[in-house]
Image (cartoon, rainbow, N blue to C red; front, top):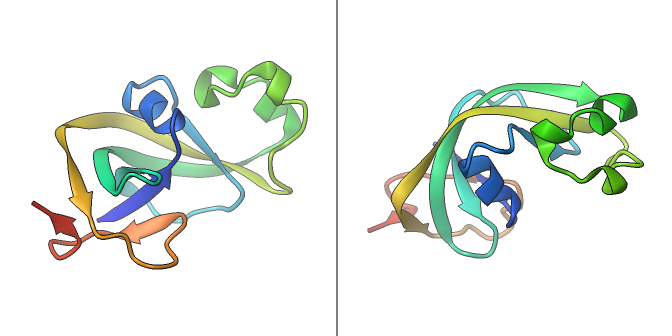
Length: 119
C-alpha cells in the first residue's frame, strides 16, 4: 500500500471527512486505497480512497473552499504553478495509529509493507 505524507491540520480534516481534495503541485495516477501518514510523526493514522486527480484553475481553486478547506483569504493565487486536486473519499481512522519506518528521502509517498509497519 502507498502512504501519503500530509501535514497537520490537513490530515485531521481529511480523516474527519471535511477535506475531500488534497491540493498538490503534481498530478498522480495512483488510485485506490492509500494510507495517511502524519508528517513528522512516524505514524499511519488511517486510510482513504484516492479516486481522481484534476488540474485546477484559479477560479476552480477559489470557488472550492468546501472541498480543500483553504480559507478564501489564502486562495488569492494558486499555490503551485500547476495545481492539482487529488480527490479523496471514504476516510477511515485507525483505532490506534500504526508506526512505520520512514525511508530516507521520502517526502510525498512511502511504500508501506509488512516490513515497514511496526507492531
